[in-house]
Length: 266
Image (cartoon, rainbow, N blue to C red; front, top):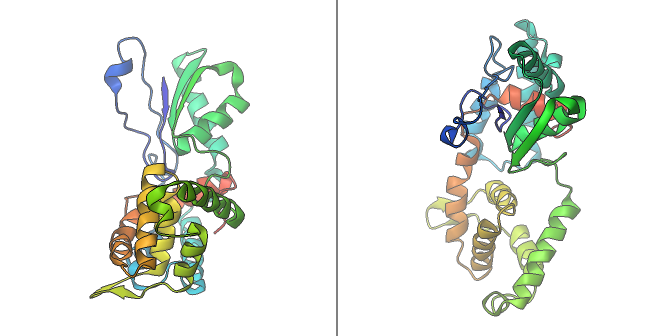
């Protein structure tokens, strides 16, 4: 079993649930280039901006321009230090794993992948189908998964609006869920008591919550509460929002690999 962990920007040199497999399988971990090798595609320029995100609307043109500049600065610095950033792609990563497979003498292998790693597994199967015996994917990250067009998000909100209209409690709070969210979005509360509400964080956290039906329901509840004059839930969401971006990550690796998948445009 060759493991392909998520990220990108996370190490591939750890595995959980070893006891499930070790009795009947070898388990092989191949480090991701740019994270686990001699070259680390770290971007302190981006980390510094992440730490200061709570001070401005992260969706503002100013904030987005700052992040674009930070990634560009990071790329230039890495190149000046001798890194060939064009070599950090999914296909190059797969060829690293293929070299190890061949060196260890495995004719066929099983892939166990999660999140971003499922992209690696999918492309691996395209490149070397004869080498894959089984491929198990968890939390599948589809092509283009990190770029959702506005109309797709609108369609998802419309879907939840239909469910809301069919629910006694939800429909009692709004005649049209999407219109209520739109109205609040255009008139975001600035603070709750002494706590500021960062509109950008609330919107990004809301977007992320739509991936889970449980989290989506909770987030919709706080938007309805805000429409009723109680923005406390938004204040809490704005407070924890920065934690979404403080997970230790090698941001240069994240950018390079997402760009190679067409999922990121700095």
